[in-house]
Image (cartoon, rainbow, N blue to C red; front, side, top):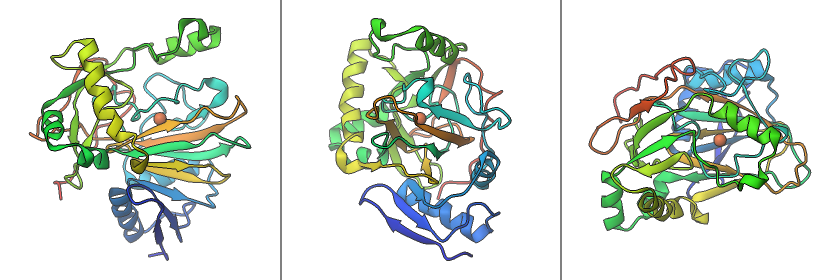
Length: 303
Ligand SMILES: [Fe+2]
């Protein structure tokens, strides 16, 4: 095994990893150590990463089959697993979300690699939703355990109509060209650690059994625990970095604070399992088939 060094960045989330050369095939012991570190810290931060698109996809494959770039948004040319996250193509990621939760089995992990970094701003916030769950007062925790939420890619992103120009309208049309609706447990049990986390975020639009306005209040109440500063790492990007986060138990937010300057990351995600709630019941799809985008990960028995 390489001389892997894992150093915490904050108490609740994030660790820097050094001593692994991501451009080479990793041995099993290193992959296991990285998987364990991801389970513990939720977000791993790698410096001095010299990968191209093929290299990023190869690295991410150590954690499982990779997904297509996105269910509806095209990949980088020649790299079918790479989604361009580019400020020139809209900045809609400045809301708290977990990637692609509108499908039945959202990616289990997400990697982001820095390509172009603005001279200031453009940080990514990543929140530990298991810490958020633990922070809930007992009565709220009990309530959350029983709730299910409908996630969809088709909702008004709180962007005022007049702020939507032609390009943005075209991007929105592409994003929602296939409409997805999936019901997930509000509290998801992590299949590898047994840890419970709030599984909501921007695509969660309605709580099953509640009205739209009641849903909003409950979701806002729970979400406030996710975004507590103590549960968040704020990552200031530099060139040649890669961030890997556990998409089953985190949320993230791309801060729109760089005056529209060029900013580009490349994203590769690992196919996920179907989420399960505290009673073992699994998520179910209402609308939209994502089988062209992702396989379903088989999960080993929970630890
Ligand atoms: Fe994202």
